[in-house]
Each structure stands twice: as structure tokens, then as C-alpha cells.
Image 1 (tube, rainbow, N blue to C red):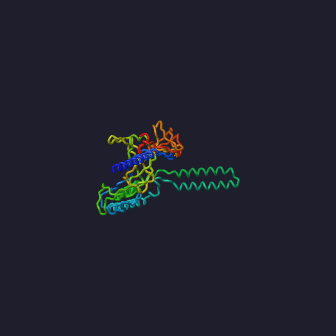
Image 2: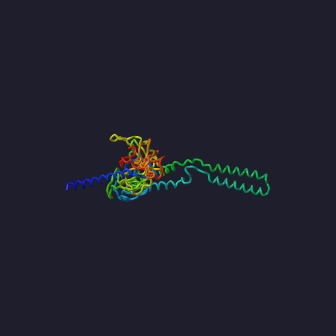
Image 3: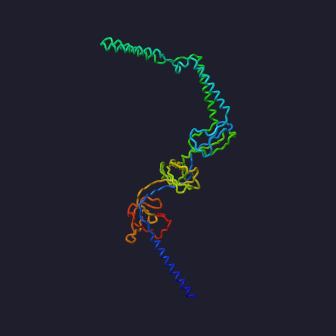
Length: 391
């Protein structure tokens, strides 16, 4: 019985060793193909979305809310009335000021004021008389020309010139000193106009108007409630203007420039990529737990309605981009960056070959020489799955 158990144990050991050897061979012969593709080097930035164009609106006076014309989530346009107070006394003030202005204006119009333009006097009658005389002289010159009286024509044309000069003199305005009584009425009209403008301005404080196109995000009041002038009661945000606020590590900040393209991914919307551009990088660093970083803003291009203020996000700022280049996995590269090499499968045999490399994104590298598209290279036997070239 013991011999039988010993034999069975030996058989299992042999099988296990064989499987182990087979597994080692399979792992040693793990290969990858040299392919063409796009290589992008980037700097990663984490942060949150923000809608910077936002306002908290309030009334300009203290009174009772009479109407709330919007609700949370409504789209509004610039100049739209969002809410108003009763402000009946202010409305009455506007009506009274309007009436006083109209009365003062009517009184002014009953004087000689309307006959003069901006307190300047022009002799329009003299202008027309001089022009009519010039026209008569021209008609006379025309008749003399048809009769062949050339000597008399010169004298008539000189008279035309005199008439035109007189018309020009009559058309030049001279300052007209209005009578003092009319000046007083004019001043009363100006004062009434100013009072009307002030009354309208006070009434406008009882109305909240949208300062730009946007969405109502919050309403903190109710109809019939008395609100103070300092209370912020309606919030409006522009959802078409979205930025990502993040921080770049001091190691990467020198590689980033304004205007560089960025691809933004969102934790709440997996699989969704949004394009953006770097629009701000602070020159003042922030130190936290010994790590220095620099505030960075990335403005989004054509944001859609799925994006929300505050969403967690990650941006890959594109530093360099190489299209349709020869690529190889960093796991397949042996040696050092200055003197890299690979093992290439040629006619079933493995041969060592030196190569030259270009840029790398940390996972794959650009092959400048030494390999051709479609060739098969072998991963090093001792290479761990997550150990990268140069690590």
C-alpha cells in the first residue's frame, strides 16, 4: 500500500514539473507585434468641473415679493424679468414724474422755443430768396446763350455768383439768446426729466432681471415674503461656459503651455471624452504636504447638457503627438534607453537586435530604426507583467 502511494505521489510530481516547465516555456515565448499607430505624450491633471459665469441676484430695495416668474431649472435669456416686488408707491412715483415731465414739456412747446433748433437761429427765408434769384439769373443766362449774346452772359453769371454767396451767408446759423423766461421753462423741463429717470431707476430696483443667458439654479424666496435689499434670492449660471480646475505637479509644469489641447474624462460619465484647451496656469505654486503644484484651468469646447458643476475629472494635456509611427511595447525592450535592444523571431529562431527609439508614453515607444512593421518580438523571460522599460 505504501509503495502504491509512493508511486502515485511520484507520478503527480512528474506531471506538476512538466506543467511547470511548459508554463515557463509559454511565458518565455510571449511575443508582441511591431505595429503602426499614434503616439501621444501627455501630462495628467486631476480636478473638478466649474461653471465660472454665475451670479447671485438680489433686489435693490426691501419690500414684499409680488411675483416669481421662473422656477429652478428654467432657461432664461438676457434681460428677462425673473421676479418683482409690489412696490406700488414706486410705480405711483413714476406715473407722477411722467405727468410732471409731460406738463413741463408742453409748457415749453407753447413758447417761441420750437421755432429754434438747439438755441440757434437760421434765416431760412433769406436763403430761399437768394436761391430763387440765382435760379432766375441762370434762366436769363440760358436765354442769352441761345440768342448768341455772349458779352451779356458774363454779367448775368456774376449776378448768379453774388446770389449764391448771399444764400450761403443766410444759411450760416448764429447763436440766439433765448429770453430768460423761456430759459426758466427749459430748466424746469430738464429737472422734470431727471426726476422721471430717478423714479424709473428706483422702480427697477424692485425687479430682478437676468444679466445673461443661463439656467436658474436656486430660488430662495416665496411670493408674499418680505425680502431685504441685501438678500440674494435667485442664482443663475451659464452652462455653456465650463472649466476644469486642477493642479499640475512641479515636475510637469515646465512641459505645459497655454493653448495646448486636453482630453478630459469624467468619473460620473465613463467612456465620455470632452475636448478642452489650457487657458490658465498660475505662476504661484501651492505647497501641500511638501508637494508643490500650480493651479491650472482648462476651458472646455462645446460642453453638452450632461456636464455638471463640481464633477470629478481628469485631463490629459497633450504635450506631443506623433501619427502613424512604428510602435513597440516597452515590456519587449531590453537594455538601457541609450542602448536598447529586442529579441526578434526570424524564421522560427530568436535573434538579438539593437534598435533606436524616439518618444515614449510610458507604455509603448516609437521605433526609429532596427525593426519593421509586422515583425514579432519576444518579451524577456524575467520581465514582470507590470514592469515597464527603464523602471
